[in-house]
Image (cartoon, rainbow over all chains, first blue to last red; front, side):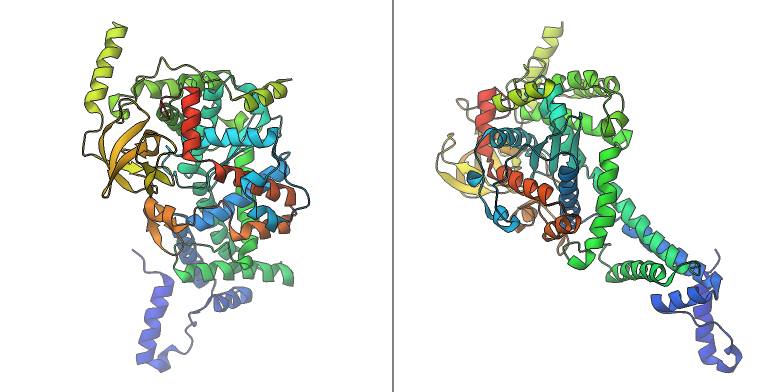
Length: 369
Length: 162
């Protein structure tokens, strides 16, 4: 295997210490990013710069394999949920007028305006929680909400926020089917499907920052070059911390990272589906959650089979009949070992569909019109 | 034939169920170990996800509850609040990998809001979205596992209060 140029140069430097006069014209190996940036700006020692770039790219790829800390997931997830609610028509909820954001954060549920929207969101959260506590991440702050949007969709933000559109509520015939949709979204969170995309985005942003900064920047104006170099310095600092690539998004100086990475991720999730494999896995595990929570899982496959192709991510999911078939195939594999706590009505084929609670049924009916 | 097959499955289901003395993992946050199988009965202990209890039997009159031993306390828990399977580990910025119990106890998961969320909403002028998320978060945090059990019972769900 060929020894990297940088290592060979460092070895030469050691030799030079022993025989200094012979090595007057050796290039100095930069020690800091700013020295590398200076070298790149001058267009000197491009071979050495290229090797440095490769080394940093490998470091960026390594942070893309590290697990994401909860604090980072929460910051990205709550930003994405805020963005979706703002951009997709808002939630079905009455927010007390005249309260500051700080005051709202201190309110108890009992202090929120009573009425149909409150009852409806509470009913949705009871159903969602009955599934989430059976998931692999029951301790997350799971939050379920109804989006006032006619599109037939549901979304899961990292950290445990699940949004269902009123258009989708209009499609479900009963609570069992709605529970299936919520369970599917829960599995996207427990499977960290969005966070896996985020890790890729972070790793790519890191590699791109060094590539741009250490490439020929002569075509850039001073401010553009400064921005490119600043981005590289941010990732340089991140790599030096040796913290598994953790970005402290709670630090206000990193707000730009939420905007760039979070907005990009949120838009990707809301306009594209996850991979076909992730989607089918979410369907299978959703069926498992339905079984554990006492719902009739066949209702979920029935819903999938009849779903319209829809728009947005739903249009990019595998076709409904294929999903329904995969769910039914999964259910057929369940055996008594999947019922260790001895639920009395196992097996579950005889389970009946549970009607929607009155608040949700009323809204579903209204949305059908 | 089909009926006979289901019957065999039911029989073997009970044979493969958890046994007395097996360890169960708590899944639901703030799970009370109660003195008797009623939602309002005295709470002998309150457990967090990842903590374990010892299975001591089923309550035949109240199949939604299991008899357990939690430390020195003997009582009942909602069947829906425990599982025979372990939970995922989480990663905290300061503590690295932690088990579900440490995660639940640490308080980091008590809110979906990051200190950065308000700053983000302000930067993007997303006040409506942020305030609505705050309001629904208040509602979500008010839902208890006993609300879930009550709903399960009234809806006739197998996993809850029945």
